[in-house]
Image 1 (tube, rainbow, N blue to C red):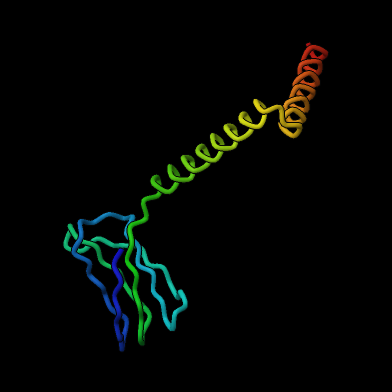
Image 2: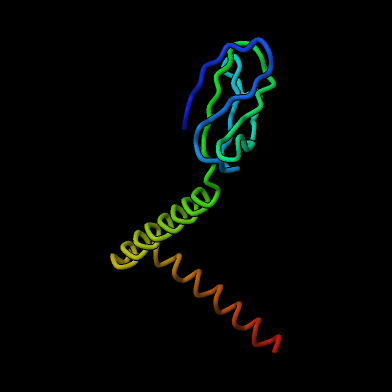
Length: 122
């Protein structure tokens, strides 16, 4: 992630000397508020460029949007939370806790109901 502060009198092209990739994005902030998001365009066949239409005192944040990384992070976090929840449940069940036993019995009741409905459909 890169941050650039610019005082622009007219629209301009911001060149960014990193290897071109369409996942680079520039976010333009004016007075601390997000004004525009600009996608990267290819300059000189190898680097990134961003056409900035805004003028005045701008703060531009250039960042790489790794789409698959964010999805993978979400899946991993969900799996981690599920594992911790199961370990907590199993620990409470081993201690004979009433809450865990109630959850266990309600799950069995739902499973019985689903298996009976499946048999009736057949």
